[in-house]
Image (cartoon, rainbow, N blue to C red):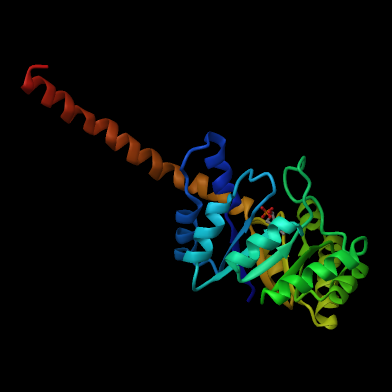
Length: 248
Ligand code: PXP
């Protein structure tokens, strides 16, 4: 059974909508672990649009018994941060400022030498390296040559068109990576409808799922959140009574 790693970026997205302190992704991570998460994943973006440096530091200090994965672009800044916080797994992702989410896998063919050197530097810091990659055999082959420990197969196309053809592309990519000796993860766009089949693919070690789980949490949590506030409003009559007594 693959490990279920919860990407909590979008807890921080809600926080950053108001630039306030809630909801705190650290608390979200603890609750996700209580719910059975096998790992917590965050993407520290260059523009810090959701997860920030404080979150990464606190998560690295507090997540001890499950896998902590840091998704990051292969930049000097991220090399420095990751060598300090030492996450359990690093997933290298492409990053564009304008994108809403990671749009495609990393093009390892186009930057083989750079990524090979970068992976070696991460390995020197005793870090385990995964590369987020499209379900493309040539890309997977180069990821192996670069020295990656894992690849994470981008499931976005399958999620958009969950048909047999797209499923088989993911399945064959996982098989190919395994034959090459790469450990294999999968993620992006997975939700309550399309995850089951991907979870059943032989050789998938970890699933990294974010948006659909955080979305579901908002919906299943809303009744309780309203109940708590309603109780406070109802209890306000106590203050009214107290005002009457004190004559204010
Ligand atoms: N895996 C990687 C490498 C990602 O960049 C993301 C998005 O941050 C995910 C998985 C999770 O994708 P989603 O939020 O669509 O579940």
